[in-house]
Length: 70
Image 1 (cartoon, rainbow, N blue to C red):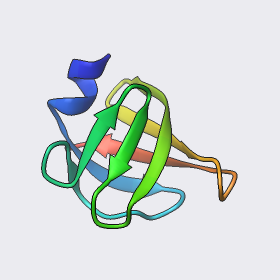
Image 2: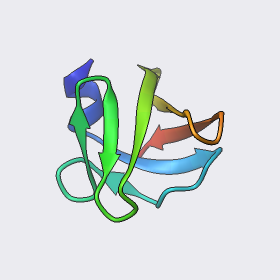
Image 3: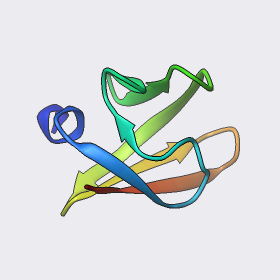
């Protein structure tokens, strides 16, 4: 699953807005099952990456965020 997440560009679709678009290595990095965003210094948990969608969970806001593959 790591390759599906890291090797794609993602566009914001729904949920807690971080930034749009995101690209791993440039805007964020994958740390185990969490995504760390450099600009906002936020860390979101990865719920899944299925059918061209990346779903993240923000524990602080108790909300999920969905990004779609570009």
